Image (cartoon, rainbow, N blue to C red; front, side, top):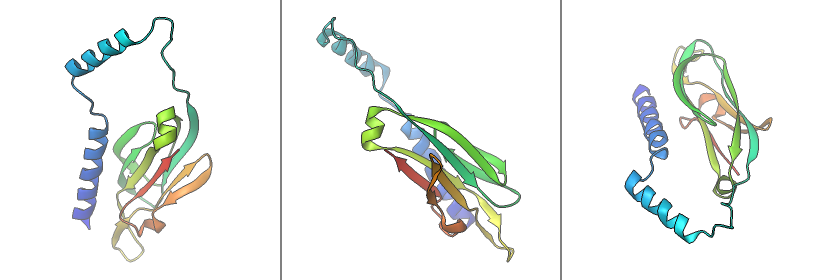
Length: 147
């Protein structure tokens, strides 16, 4: 069970780190110059309109556990339970079309029988519960794609 949690945490960390990766600066600079040349001076650059959502991540239980989360910010820290984090997520037009993933992956807690299980988690968007991990019975944590 501990290996599964460590593997899931390592995988989730890798995904979060790779999400922030982009192209190298040389190709980005070349693309930016090409865009400047093709854009007409009288046309202002298109701004993407935002849509805001209040996202609440919750992990319940007693004691402490490690919690990995992604909403408007990311984190992977030991937390005292119960734990709640509320953030405002601003969606761009692209996010509104393809979606924006929010997630929380809780560590383990000791259940009533003295066995380790994943801590229960819940995600709420604009006050409505949209995801849970079945009281800690699911090993996948909680995730939801906002559109």
